[in-house]
Length: 316
Image (cartoon, rainbow, N blue to C red):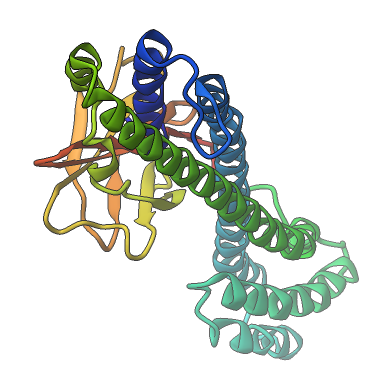
């Protein structure tokens, strides 16, 4: 379970004991019903965080797929252009020279792919104009049915995709912080209730015995291993690339990531791998498969599960 769920469980136990033995107990201006309400209020905060997480994953993958599409065209279209031109014809040789600056940029990042793409658009515009002016006219350079118009559209769309990654990432950070802050507050109130119940139990043996029903170890569960990104990638674009939030890996615990293929696996028991703090590669999967995944951290104090992340493998 997650940290906030452990806190909710403890709150439920505390409320049950309080209602049975000291129903009029008020701690910091809060009665047992108020403690339960604060505990239950963690659920919509967790849902808000999960929604933000799903939106962040979708935004990151949309940006990544956009980059992959730009990169693919900036690699294939220059070769297609070379196939349309002859170096032995002076006019065409000059056009081939326009591709030299394109080859000078390795599209290994989004920024470099955009730089190479813009250079390629300029070169292809000139090349296509030349081809259209021949007798008989020849069609524009394409690769896989896509040409300069497709590349230009992808380049134009990429900045908005990149901004969406930043925006959704900020939403996710806010959602995580809101949930954590609220959970810590409920945990603190829980502990104040427990202390007061202990005091009351000094003169009430039944209450003292009932306190054993309250799990006092939940606050010491290992921290959740946070997932920073879930991206579709690999050379075949059929793998899932995972990275983790800095500072959340606990080297003194057993850290694993486990996953479930929707419609194939009934639960998460079939697939797991030890976490590599630098990131993990899962798969390969097939186009159209939806994969749920989560982290698991186990120490001598218990087990903490991360929230479920979901990714559907898209066609590239």
